[in-house]
Image 1 (tube, one colour):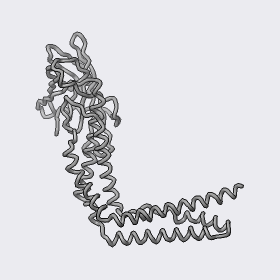
Image 2: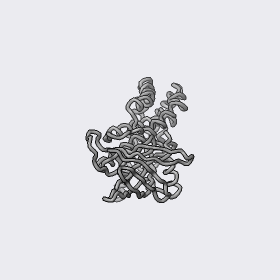
Image 3: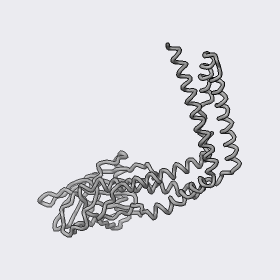
Length: 327
C-alpha cells in the first residue's frame, strides 16, 4: 500500500544521502496494549507493507523535542529469502504544547504536525501534490525495538521467498520437462561410469608393480570425481526449484523462531495461511515426483554412493604410494 508521507520523506532522504544496507540501529517497537494509562515512550513507530519507520523521542522540560527519524525498508523488486533492507536516517527538532506536536526533519525541512493522545502520535504533512496525508504512529518501548526489526526482516524474507516460489510454479512448472526415457538414459550413463571406476580400481588392486599401480592411482584423477550433474536426476531447472522450496521452508522456520511483537499494527506479517497457499502446492509437486520415481532416485543414490566409495579407496591407495616415496 502506498503511503505518501513515508514515501515523500524517503525519496528526499535517499536523494540526499547514500545509506548503507544495514540491519542495525533501527529502534522500533511496541508499548503493551494491556496498560491503560499513558507511559513515556522511547519512540513511535509507523509501518506499511515494505517499511518500518521509527521516531526516537526526546522531550525536554520546556516541551522541546529532538531525535531521529529512521526507516528500514525493503525494495519490493529485490525481495528474496536473503534480502537486506535499506536504512535511512534523518534528524528532527520540534515542540509539544498541550499535546500538540510540530516536528521539522533535517536536512530537508519537511514539516510534520499533529497531536499526541496517550499511546498514539498522529502526524500530518503535505505531499508533493498538495494533499494532506495523516498517519498514526504507535508508541514503542526500547526493550522491544530489536524484536520488531527482527520480526519485520524475517517476515519480509519469507515474503520474498514466496514471491520467487510463486513465479516458479506459474512460469516454469516443476518437472514439466521430465520424461521417463530421459531418466532411464541418465541411469544407464551413471551405471556405465561406475562400472568403469570399478574396473580401474580392480586393475590397480591386481597390479603387482608398485610403480604402475601408483601411476594408475594418479591417473584416476582424470575420471573422478564425476560432474555432479551425472548423478542428478532432477535436472538443472528442477534443482533451482528445489532450492527455492528449501529457501522458503528455511525462511518460514526462521520467522517462526522470532517473537512476534504485539500492540502495534503489523501489515507486513506473513500469516500461516498466506505461506501455505504458495508453499504447499510447491511442496506437493516435489513429494509427488519423489513418490512416482522413488525407485529411480534410490538407484541413482546407490550409484553415487558407490562412486564415492571407489574414489575413497583410490585416494587411500594414492596416499600409501606417497608415504612409501617419503620413507
